[in-house]
Image (cartoon, rainbow, N blue to C red; front, side, top):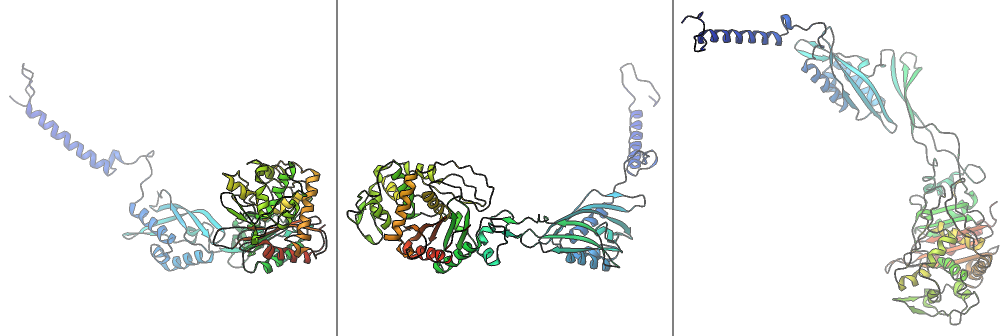
Length: 542
């Protein structure tokens, strides 16, 4: 059969003809594939085809340049450009002169121009030391030079506005600290500000303002500023930070505390009894933790103001009632008085003035387990959320877990926690009869809800505090002018460390609380501090 013969009646095809056609088809396919790959003939890009693809070597070179520049390898980056010497000089002066370190340079998709040059846009994030990050976009242009691709050097690749006529200049501004004024609107003296360091750090806007600065464009010939490229930092409002601080009381408190603390940690708060405005906040050391407002301490016997208030409120005892003061009393463990004294036949007023622990513990059954905490919150505001103008710890009087803990709570121990702010407020409430939310700035919201003490209870508490000065543990204050009332406190910390010493006091319209850590006793450590303060500031603030 020849190649031109028709299929037989059995349906067979001529084998030789099929093989020739298949071979021809393969040849055509190979030709078409080569033409397509080479974009020849009918496969050449037409007017509607996509842009030409950039040479991978060019994009690789662009990425290497950006990587070296970002890493501070300016000589290696410059070597990839058409002008290595000039490029290295400019790159170095740009980052060093503007205090830029560790920039982030991120390339975008590359494009190919009609002349074959490759353009690689990039975003730049330039961290300027202590100010912020300068962000902008620019682009690299690369051309083939011989067998290699080079970054076409130009000032504008560093930044689009960097040119032969304009350069950049970093301007830093000394914003300084905003003015902080006292209760009368006068600027606080430097020594007073120094004593308030931890307080100012917590006042909104009370510390030094954030650094300010700008990157400006400058005319290379004249040195004149032609524009501002970016600014850093917030502009000061010009409004001073207003406080309730009395500079005379603050200075005297800081001096007395520094002298009396004798290198120990200590804190003091003085505030007005009629409205809670804080006149002084002193800490030793004067910088660091604001323990006066945020500290957490067992208040010791100064808390007997609250315990006495709870007992007097329900008529569980009267100041003239006899409440024996034994040397020891065991309630799960042995409790004793400081110095292990006893006073048989003492009145409740004498127990308070002499700070008899065993007498108070002996009255524990006259209060319900939760009653002390309820009185502390309802009448004295303890444990509620206070808004004084800076962060504060507002006290805790948890219900006792057992009889031993209840006995400890009666004398300000156990799990009770307070600080000078709280105890100064307790003192103000006890002598004025009403809780006023303390404040170091004005206009703070007040979410507290309290009830005024009955007038008779406040009168009894004032008389008991006065007896503590005239006949009790705070007799060292008796020689000072004015009718001073006080209550000492000694709070156990643990079995190994000395006790913390406490004192709360009031004179005129001012209530004071002081704690000296490891002060051994309130009489030996806190009383001298408050004595020096009251001696230095004999008059009430206006």
